[in-house]
Length: 386
Ligand SMILES: [Zn+2]
Image 1 (cartoon, rainbow, N blue to C red):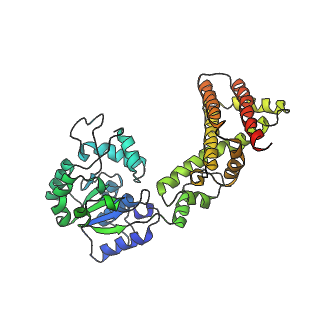
Image 2 (cartoon, rainbow, N blue to C red):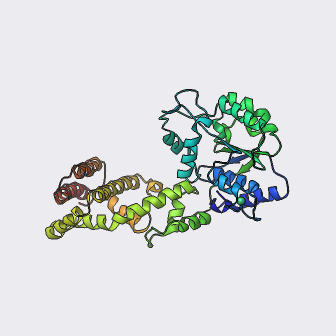
Image 3 (tube, rainbow, N blue to C red):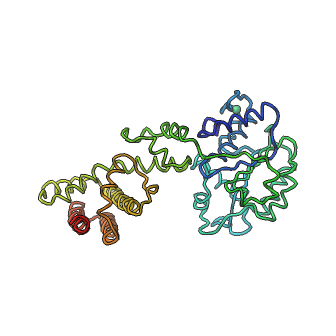
């Protein structure tokens, strides 16, 4: 992670770089910001920067031996602590050091934009909450007492410091107050009010806001080659509420769904024009030639459209993660969905997926579905437009 890979947050980057240049590094810093704002990636970029052998005034070099190790999150002088719990592989006395492989793999998969619920899913801890416990605290103090292997600055990253439990916090107070020389401790947190006051008072606060809209838009443009060019990225960026995690999710969903949008709209139109059976049948034949996985995705897309219609009907517009024509389409289609038919429509589409999975003939499935679906939709149309 270099500064250039952290989305937006330019004033914080500048401030950190200046603190290093002026030799005013705070030894314990609290990076506080909402999920998706880039607190952890910023700490990683800064750790890499201060240890780089060939840094520029703006960023680490990315290629020196130190940078390469930091890039893999495997530098021997960088120590990670994070909420943990028992898992299938760690059956008792969990602590961060026993899960460091999982942690590194998880960071790789999310490109260092870690999210607590995703992390717990990754670990497979089920409904259990994670915490950073006294074994972790003991490990931190041990690492602090050892000399650095090779880095100029030894780095400790405590991700989600609000998950430090009371025993762990008490054990760490002295370390946080006065870490050994050439040691940087980064506390990463999302909720200030959940941090134990004695912990937060020992760190210099660096507050992150949500990512600026323009920065988010720019970063989205950089990774959105796959997206339909008609889609307006500014609209998508607005839906992401300043979170890079949300932005990537929206981009993924949009590029996937859009593949079926025209087809789905055409199909519904044909369903509503029953005199033109020929066109409907040939459309259904065409769908049946797509292959099973595509047929399932088409039907799943239908389910998501019904879901968005329901959201629209209860005025929850923020939950409708669509833009442009797709958004307009859902707006027009939503009056056809109501409490009387929505469950039956879900059931129809899910049944169709069930039959596709079991190799039933696509042409038959889709023709059957067309008739049943249009009956349900008409029922509703008759009610609202007498
Ligand atoms: Zn370097």
